[in-house]
Length: 94
Image (cartoon, rainbow, N blue to C red; front, side, top):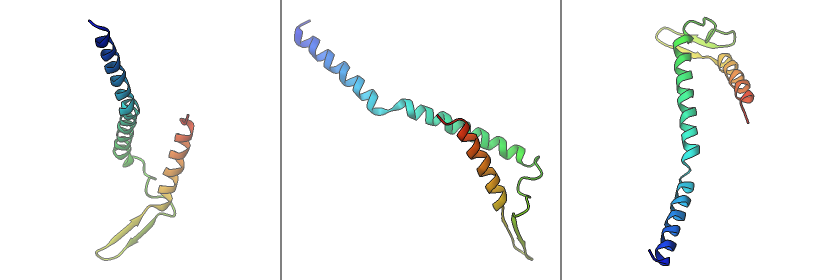
């Protein structure tokens, strides 16, 4: 092994280290885990949403029924869910 070979291997390992840092796989992994947790929570909410009678039936939710048409806009339910999620995320913010 010559001195030139040692220098080349040191440069290769340095390039590899810089390449791993540039990919940013750590934050991507964390983001995918959080996305998975969010999807699981959304699925649980959809499964259990039918068992909570007041979800989507709060005073202020807009329901327009005609002969062949129903328009439903759960504005108050959306606001309540938004407030709950905001408080939840504020608790776990860094």
